[in-house]
Structure formats: C-alpha cells, structure tokens
Length: 390
Image 1 (cartoon, rainbow, N blue to C red):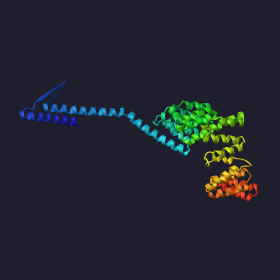
Image 2 (image 1 turned 120 degrees about the vertical axis):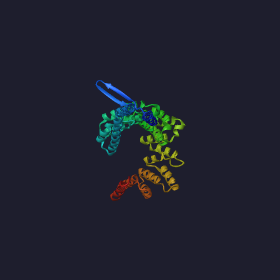
Image 3 (image 1 turned 90 degrees about the horizontal axis):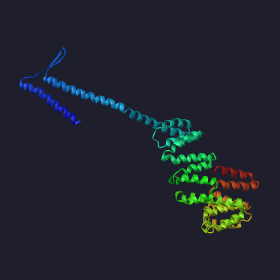
Image 4 (image 1 turned 180 degrees about the vertical axis):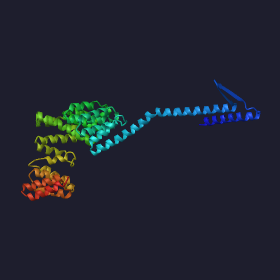
C-alpha cells in the first residue's frame, strides 16, 4: 500500500505545481481540441487534472475487474470447500447411524463420502454397514476400495478373509492374507486369523514353523495357547491314524525340550484323556505337578474319571492343607471325587467351595449329587442358585 500513497502524493504535488505556476507567471495557458465540428477548450491545469482523474478511474476499474475475475477463478475452491464440509457431515452421520444399528441410513450417508479424504475409513464403515445388513456383495466392493489405502489395507483384508472363512473358503482367505507384505503379516490380528485358518486346514507342522517366527509379535498367553493347540492337533492326527500306543511312542521320541514344554504336556494329556487313558494321564499330571499346581495342567485334573483316584485326591488334600482358602483346589477335589463315585467327599468339599466363592459349575455338580440321592428339592435349590451366577 505504500506505493499507492507515494503515487498519490506525487500526483498531488504535480497538481499543486500546475495550479501555482500559472498564478506566479500570470498566464494560465490554454489547450484547444477539435473533433470535426466540435471544439473543446480548456486550461493546461484542467487538462492535467482530467488526465489524473482518468488515470485514477482506469486504475480503479482495472482493480475492480481483476477482483471480480478472482471471484470466478476461486469459485471452484469455494464450492470444493463447501462440498468437503458436506462430505464430512455425511461421514460423521454415517458413523453415528452405524453405531445405532441403522445400517441402511449409514450406507446412505457414507455413499456421499466417496470423494472425501477419509483414508479409506469411510469404505470400511460402509463395508461393515453392508455386511451387517446382509449385503455381502456391496461389502466386498467397499473393502476392495478400502484396500487402496495403506492405513485401511490390513482391516480391509481381515474383513475380506473373515467373510471368506464364513463362506467356507479357507484357501481364498489364506490367499488374501498372503497378499499383505511382511510387516503387515506380523500384525497380531493378522497372525491370529492366519493361525486359525491354518488350523482349519490341519497344517500343524507349517503352523508350528510359523509360530516361532510370530512369537515376538504376540502375547505369551497366545503363544502358549497356540503351541498347545498345535500339539493337540498333531497328537490327535497320530492317535486317529495310528492309535494310542503309537501316540505314546511318538511322545517318547520327542526332544527333551519339547517334552518339558507345558503347552505340549497339556496337549498330550488331553489326548490321552480323549483316548480313554485316564490312568496314564493321572500319573503324568501328578508327576509334572510335584512342586504344586500348574495353571495350565491343573484344570485337567477335573477331567480324570477313575474308580481309583486316590493319588490325585491325596495330592489335592495336601495342597489344600497349604492353601485352605483356594476355591480352585476344593472344586477340583470335588470333581475328582464325584467322578470316582465318592459323593460324600465330593459334597463336603464342594459345599466348602461354595462358601468361599459360589460358582455355577460347583453348584450344578452339587445338584447332580442331590439328584443321585433322589433329593430333588435340594437339587432344585442348587440349580436355582447356579443359574443366578454367570
């Protein structure tokens, strides 16, 4: 703006000089302009002032012209900004409707966000709404669009693979996951789904090889759980094809490190129980828990079904003496005693367990014991109590 003030100041000085000069000289001077029959006569000062006014008028008109043109040039940006705000409103309304379970309304609003910058989240939300409303084809179309965005790719592939799994297309689900890069395949949710798919196909050895690579990317509990499931799958396959004796031989042939792995021990014991080899399972469970209950192996004691469960009962009674407020110990002893036919001991310890912390499984077992004694009234009481506990 400084140049404008300087220019106006110079013009003012020029006009002042033109006015003062004739006054000093005593001669105002004249200019005659003829256009055909028309003659225009004016003083020099009037001519200069006219030129200045015309110049200023030209400058103002020029500035006004370019300002108007800039409005038209900027109209696309203005309408674009307005459109973006509308898309943002539609996006938030679509998410809100999805949370409310209004899937058709959600799809209506999210359909207006296709040109927005939502990093693929709008397509993921639309896919979820379509899936929930039963339109799987539309859900897949939205997921294909979401896969083009890096931050939405993992979620989109997971949703596609889960749909494949629900349709029984395990190979297709695995193939989709394999399209992810190495870093994306180490995502915990991707690992969990791929492990599940490989388990569905019975690829136990391949899954075991993968698990060592996944170990640092998943929780320890998940690693133990999958190790146990892999071992159980392999043991079940051997037992079904070659029999229980071959299963025992296979276990004995395993490296010492694996035979000392708690997850593998639990899986092997479970398979022995499924094969009806409860006596062998009892011996191993007590051997592997000499120093006290193991959180992975201990729950398997409840599955023992032996006429002579004295070793297990004695072990549990010894643990109870050291920890007489542990409801898990009383509950396990009650189940073992019940399975062994000793209802008197089972009822005694289960009643103790319910006093410490009433639990549904213990109350329902007490109901079974009462029914065996034909005490239906007491059985109904225990059932009612158990049904009120989640």
